[in-house]
Picture 1: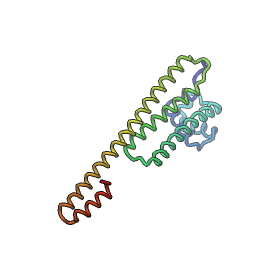
Picture 2: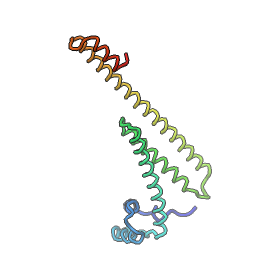
Picture 3: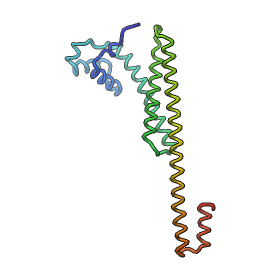
Picture 4: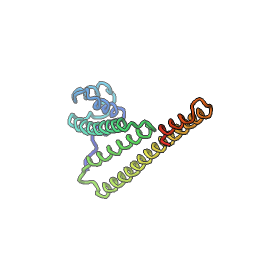
Length: 190
């Protein structure tokens, strides 16, 4: 088994800054190395800077992950816009985030094609991912069922309120009973 990447051995603060800069895409590799040396001079002496090739490999891997997350987020937004579903949006957003994390974990698993890796461990990870995906799918279905029930209950409550108001109009004599009956039949098909 090979040794860890020089980037994975960086201090957390340096690694977070590196990931932020790579994610923004505003530096070349040489500019990024110079930025790290300038921003973290004390730390740069304590650890070796990653090579250009190591930063390039890490940047490609990070960009693939970021692209997958962006694509997943955009798809979730499009689905929500097309469905016109504005009920319990936080749960939907949370579900989308969990889906993105699972997708990222599966990508990481695919990238970990290490010839020395234990096949049983890989199968166990895939099995755990499948269980989590099934749970997430059930959660999403239950959320949609809940949203449909809430919508139906709100519709019934509104119909009851309207029916009560129409009945009240008939009792006050402001609207003749035959006209009221026609309105009720047209509105509620009763």
